[in-house]
Structure formats: C-alpha cells, structure tokens
Amino acid sequence: MKRCLIAAGLVAGLVLALSADASKASEAPRSPDAVERRIRSGSVELYSRAIGRGQPVIVLHGGPDFDHRYLLPELDRLAERFRLIYYDQRGRGDSARGVRPEDVTLASDLDDLDRVRRSFRLDAPALLGHSWGTVLALEYAVRHPTRVSRLILMNPAPASASDFAILREAYLKGLGADMDRQRQLTAGAAYQAGEPEAVAERYRIHFEHALRRPEDYETLMARMKAAFVSQGKEGIVKARAVEDQLMRDTWHDAGYDLLPKLGALRIPTLVITGDHDFIPREVAEHVAHAIPGARLVVLEDCGHFAYLERAGEVRSALDEFFQRTTPTRRER
Image (tube, rainbow, N blue to C red; front, top):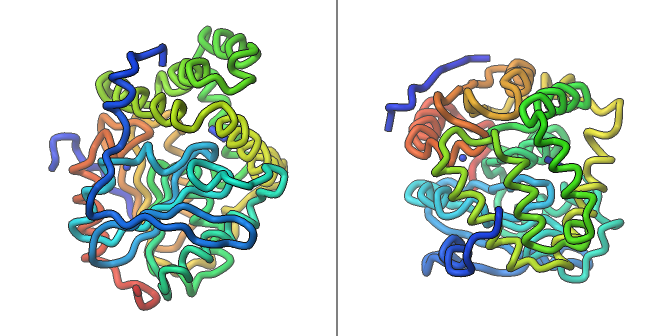
C-alpha cells in the first residue's frame, strides 16, 4: 500500500425543517448534457444517468438506503475527463418501482451492477464507490476481476464485520448524548412511517460529526431533505427495508470478512478518506493494506463526503491516479 497526505490548501446501513424553497433549491440540477434511461434487470427497471466523455466510470452511491442524487452536482465536474455512469440501486430512488425489499440481496445488487455494465457495452470500466458503494465495488471486483479496470474507493465503508464494530464504537462515542435523542426520534411514529421531516431530522443527528465544515454539512442536509421529500414516505420505508436486508448480508453477519479475498486483486486501486471522517481511518487503511499496490490518500480537514468537502483535491488525486496507473483490462 502506498500512502499520501494531501493538504487542504491544494487545488467525493449507515434537517431540522428547512423552508420549502431552500429544499427545492438544494435539489441536484438536471444537466442538459446528461442522458437518462432505464435498464431492465430481471423484473426491475433501474434508473441510470450518464454524462461526460472519456474513460468510463460506473458510480456506486452509498447508503445503502440512499440514491445517487446526494453526489450531485459536485461529482459531475469529473465529466470533463470521464464518462460518468450513475444508477440508483435496486429498491432505492428511481429504481424502486415494483421492487419488494425482501427480494433485494447483496447478490441481486451485484447482478444489477453487471447488468448496468453490459447495458453500456463496457468491457472493464472503472468503479467509483462512495461509502456503502465501496463494499459493492469490492464485492464485484472479487467476483469479476476481469470486468474492472480500476477501483476508486471514496470514504470506504467497513469491509468486515469486525471493522463495522470499530465504526459502531467510534460512532457511539462521537454522538455521545445525542444518541439517546436519535433513538427517541427513530422510535417515534413519524420516523417509522417515513415522514420526510422526521427522517431529515434523524440524518441531521446521524451526520452531525461526519463533515468538517458547517457550510458543507448544511449543504448536504438540505440536499438530503429535498431527496426525502421527493422520495415520499413509501419510498423511504422501502429503501430502509432494503438497507436492513443488505446489512444482514454483510455487516450484521458475524462471519462477514471481505479483507482476506482482496489480496488476490491485481486491479489499480485508489482509496480516499478524510482525516475527520466519522468512519475511523483504520477502516480505510485495512482496505488499502489488503489490496496489493493500492494507494491511500488522506485529505486534511475533510469528513465523510470528500467529493463535496475537498472537490479540488479529489480531482487532483484522480488525475494523478489515472496518469500513473495502467489498467489491467481495456477500458471500454
């Protein structure tokens, strides 16, 4: 593993009510250059959005109960160099129609990712995962190493049940007394029913220590609230049930441990984390140590949303990574 620290001065299943105008203003703008379409995957249609030209990169959003919208518009700025392919994972966002949560598994998520790859006629694209999306990227790469040219793992989520326990301990310590407030809120009828206001309030607590700068925190909270309002109660409850399913397949399984399998990968890998990420740095270090030749970049004054908090440094790290590495497979 190669490790690097980038200074902040250099030039991405874990709101208190804002005004309606602010919520609408926070929604990710629809770029006229983006192409949206639906991809059939078994009995489900997946929403996809492609933008940009250049080397193809499939973007895997976090959550697992979120959709791709929280990544916009910041991540779209990479479209100057890359062809970015976003999609909402099964049962989330605009890929929720007709989905039964009990039918969503880690295996179905991986099958969907492969279907997206084939739909865009890509041999071996790069995969860019954020948070939970890094788990999907790694699981897919382990199963299909010849179908991935590069891995970009941004603010990685735990790759083992033991690392999830490390995260949980740090999370509880970070929230302190606010954990009792969060438990009370999530036990309430409004949150259980998926009321957007209550869900947004819960995530204000959940991500209270996840971002370094207050202005980035408010930007993200307004954006997430707008997404919850758009999603509606039914969509929120469905995505939450999907998250529960996926956590049972991974972090809540005491034997879950992807790390030993990563030693077999020969895929150029960039791991990006922040020095103030609420996921402890050792989680990212464990992933980077496990993958031969992986490079770890730690961004200063950065939390869990590197693409938002340190967009310039993320772009610099990606440019250097693509310039210095040779893909294991043809990128098309």
